[in-house]
Image 1: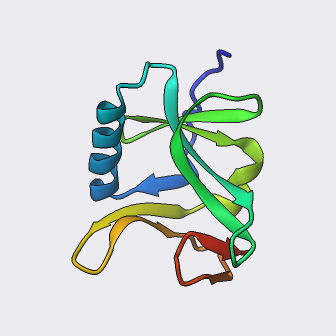
Image 2: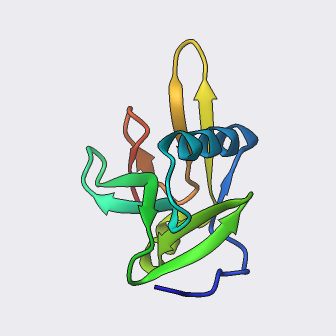
Length: 117
């Protein structure tokens, strides 16, 4: 599937820590060039919707973005839930992992990976 990369402002951003960790993870997995980072949502979780973050190939209905040198795939319908979201990576004593700062979330659960709009 060949589509042009969207040069418009991407709906999500990554902190410097998230970019560093994502590039490290992609290198460790030795993925081919047709893989990009999938950012999206899916039904489920204790608050109604879960975040999706993982490497995948482009699918029907995806838009492709280039964010901080990372190829990102996002289904067109997910942009309205994720617009303005920032993905961070924390590597501290109390928590390690990706953190989603979503201005569209009306509530989130304690685990931080589930939200409602």
